[in-house]
Figure 1 (spheres, rainbow over the protein chains, first blue to last red):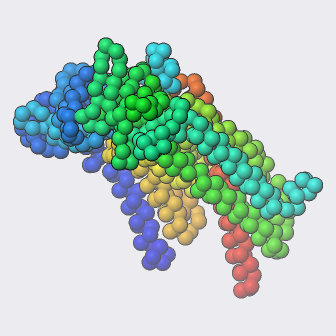
Figure 2 (figure 1 turned 30 degrees about the horizontal axis):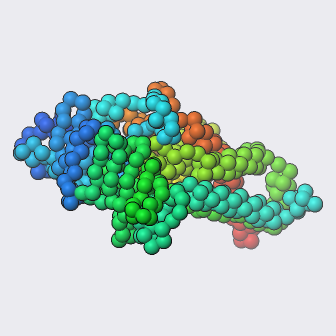
Length: 150
Length: 177
Length: 232
């Protein structure tokens, strides 16, 4: 076996082993909690204040308030048990909507406010034409609030 | 004749087959583009102002911040829609007015009212995002190329093996199978 | 085995091609847009088939590797190798189309959620597998090591599949699950056609690539013997 081939072999084994180790622990272990729920955020210890975290929840119906002539808005995010106020500045994604899921990135402060400038829309797994939706059809999907509780 | 080409010229057969696949792909592209122009194609606010259209049109733009006024009893909404540096006033009267949100890019469907210089919309649609869809489907091209290269290589290898005379019996058994 | 592949592969190719052609037309032109995502839901008809076939490809690769370790039939090893080569393409395709779907719907091309990370690891394992195969010279050892690697890497498969059910992710949960099917008929039909087409094409591509690898090996062996004769 030539030297180059040996190095290549070692690299390829490292890639796979690295991937598997990553899977088993470390980064991935943390990322299993991809976002916190509003209940967890409300119970945050002061250590978490000002730290960048993600929070996922349902945008409460009727809670979105837009500050005129600015890129600022306020809304409430809930997981069914607790609700947190979110102050957002920026352009929300087009699929951001009241009554739908969202994951916001930002920080929680001592005034019990969440500040964010990045929203990701979390869509559900049901797909249907608009006529069906308007006719009130419900497809068998996971309850959205349950997807937050894992 | 077809059978002759099939058996005697495997390479020609390969090219014929892939020509057919390209033709079918082209047909699908045309049909999809036709549907796009029929159902989804939209104008922008600046086009409306420079060349006022007749009949029902679709306009793509963003709801300007601070302009959305919802009139709850009549289920109407007024806002100005901007795009390409221009803005037009829109009077919306239709389903799902709660889908309207400031800073949201969407498509409104309706007629241009030239005398009052406003757009009367009766329906709205989500932004079509056709660029993303096209990009995603473009992956069919490398996929086809990948398969073509493999088929091509298999034929070349068969030919090479036939050319190397020394192990005739093996080749024979391959051909019969 | 090679004879069997040569005899039946064309049927898979033709059937797959027809399914994909009809599926593409239905998915791109004839199916309705989604109530919430609009037109961009059409990416689903290519993303989901890519994702599900790439996982099946890995599963087949694992099965072929086990079979090889048991029976030591070199053509089965060629098949595992071929599945990895095709699988890399399909896995990368699923990531690519998923990323493009993610931008307009989620508002991000990529995020570190469990589904995306575990799927990318699947791609890394496949790349590592193919690299390993190029760097070992002895054919028999190459096949053995690769088979072991494929089997070890298979632990990622259930993780990818169930990640969206077990953990909090940005990726939505399974649409087809014991809960039922959460896709309306008009959208399910093109999805089924495309998926069927992708499975058939996967089978066909693995068939073609298995032949390619087998013939390459045959040719190398012949050249080796020819050279040997010259030296004698």
